[in-house]
Length: 431
View 1 (tube, rainbow, N blue to C red):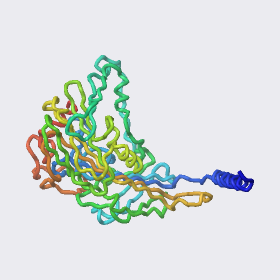
View 2 (cartoon, one colour; view 1 turned 90 degrees about the vertical axis):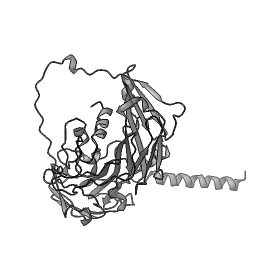
View 3 (cartoon, rainbow, N blue to C red; view 1 turned 180 degrees about the vertical axis):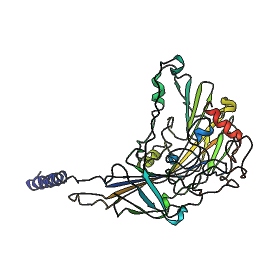
View 4 (tube, rainbow, N blue to C red; view 1 turned 30 degrees about the horizontal axis):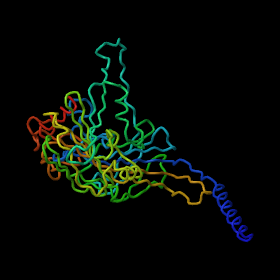
């Protein structure tokens, strides 16, 4: 090697070292928390093939449990109650105990000019009298097995099902349900947060409502600059139009119309046969899938699509393997489906590209969107959900239909929904 070449290589190596040192020496940007944070959770829930019924009773209510009696309540966006739902929450460091604020909304929402945000008040705790534990109060250890199937396929694939014996090792139950999930990034429902819907306003989100347009948040302790726009990608999704054909003894064919702005899909079914619980999902990986029916960040959705845990947005059909729920008899199996929209994150002012300049945002906004539906497997379902005759969207009190309105079917707890379907849902959960 010539002396000239050796010198050139040493010079090049020195230049690389200088550049690397310069990169390491760049100051870390100072980032301060925003003064105000706002969360908008947007959801459309439906029962496949059933009429749209604004404000129908919550699932725990009509399956025999307690709880809400219908209407618009904070938290409906995170549940499965059919309807169109918004959960709005505000927190400002200027008023840590909470503040009364107003969310000015576009005319397309058809809900007036604004929605009031009021501080959350924790319900009073009931006082209970201590008592001696009895044998009846001691929970029984889990029994039976979990049979887990996965993948869109007309027949059971080789190596399935994955069997977990719950009686053999109590810890197996926890491990079985410890699959994929995303840490919660939503608003806390706690003192210091101002929310809508609330006791002042429970306006139902009407059919045809649109979030597209200009929004503004104002109130004591809220920065005057808190104004932002929502586009079509974060609008309320339409109900999922799911079709199903095939008896439980056969392969059940599932097909749906592509949901506008969907980023991914996921389907999950659950049934039981005796003491065994049977689970199936559309994923290409063996997972119980219990942690996926919630909002997911865009990066997580894209990664799990790549790992074939979620179906890409181009997918419009799937199949449940033949006979996996046939042994359940009349109890059937419950299918759930979710379509995720794209999450929107906004901040003002934007983050400086120069790391030497501190970032002190006045506010940030997070908008999360999803649509879900559910159906009884083995029942023929076709087309889009119909609007129940006689229903009126946009009631301010979020009340139930008045007696005598069209759509009431004998033997059903919910107008327009056959009583047999509700009984089948109850049977899945042993109600």
